[in-house]
Image (cartoon, rainbow, N blue to C red; front, side, top):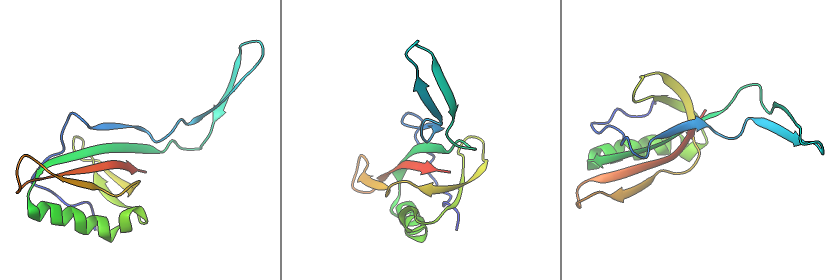
Length: 115
């Protein structure tokens, strides 16, 4: 089961992507020099995404996906909203849901997807 296709697109403003953590080990010396080396053989990536204006049915699709991946215990497929590139990702935290501008629309904050 891949991340559901929703009517609503993710919000642009809180969208972020980058390295999941600093991929470099750094050691300073007394002379002011710094030795560095890679921490990993690959750099884990992360995405911070927020969806707004979700209908009750779209919210139910996201909740069903969240339960299917057991809140991050399992990896699943997610498509990047701009490039449509598919990634195998894992939730780093449960999705937060909040009402958006009315009693009928929802926000879904995906704090972090990692791969």
